[in-house]
Image 1: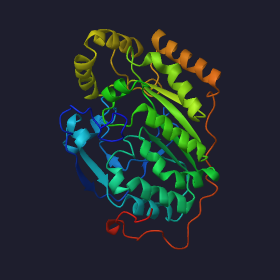
Image 2: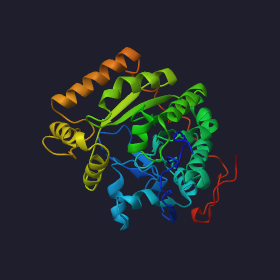
Image 3: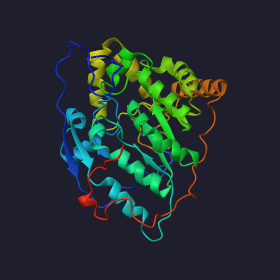
Image 4: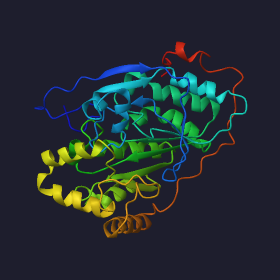
Length: 340
């Protein structure tokens, strides 16, 4: 095995991979709405609950508790896939009076985690977006996104698609430690480059910034992403909601014990004395001198590299309902599409 392989790659002498169990969830709706001022979208789709990438810092971990599963290992190994997601989305688009607005894929968990190789739920969703000329954005830390470059490039030609690639570190060892089953940094940069070459507007998310762990890499990540074709950039300060806090502290005990006190001290400085701050307008950014210093470094680097701009606006004017549905009208009967 090689550390750069996407998915469940571990070091040669590592213990056997944890076994993933995928179950299916049937639901009547697939699009989630939000009114948060901290994110640039108000509609999203998460094809999967839980995420095999196993990122220790993932703020979505507590959502697994609502399924009576643990935010720890269960979140990484007991994945819930949304059966018939594409058919449900098509039914949504065909409703009388539906008004299109950009929909984000992967707002909570990664739409290109390893289970997607076989299940192709994200691919099916993109085929519906493509057939209806509906705007879509994607956030991922997986190189698997290049599999769908054909659909994304065609959508992008009409101003209907963006992709943001999340890069936490350029150090493969640190990335493997923080994000054990996500694509290595080099693969993410190459995925970003391949999408850019295909004409897809791409950006980079330098997130999360973990104090005293990867905060020294801000400029280097931005520079590498710009060289690969990124046209915009964003960043998020580490968040530790609910069960994520104890999980992250345990990670520090194991992997960065000598830095633990410093990491938590800086985080508290940026979170009003706490390890997390759930307030809108603060939870992604932090406050205080340390958080301001991070923002100043980020802004300066973006300005120098030409990343201090937004990706082109997505168009809602292309939306059109085909006379014949792409899929069966019954989402419960839908199986993954058999295309290439």
